[in-house]
Length: 94
Image (cartoon, rainbow, N blue to C red; front, top):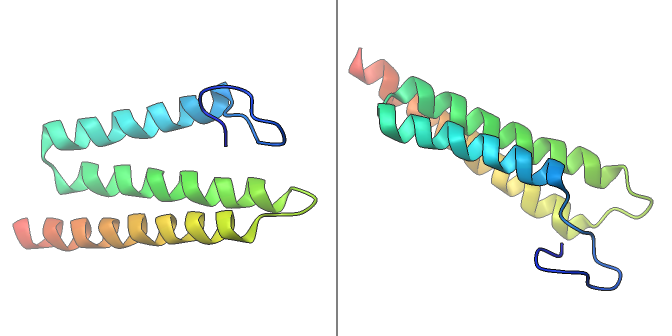
């Protein structure tokens, strides 16, 4: 993806992508401020959902980039694992 300007044959970052990333960033900021495992769970699930949506978008391309899909799936797995750890912390704190 091209963040800073047009690069021939490169996908451009759209306002939609920026908006989604901003929204997930706000969710993570709220989780950090509240220091609540429940808000961490919500933020990490939102991050995983964003990555899964990117995989679906990539699969819609005529020739999907398997490296991109692999990275996005890896990031989704990391987010889901972090949500699991936050869930364990939530159960420990109760």
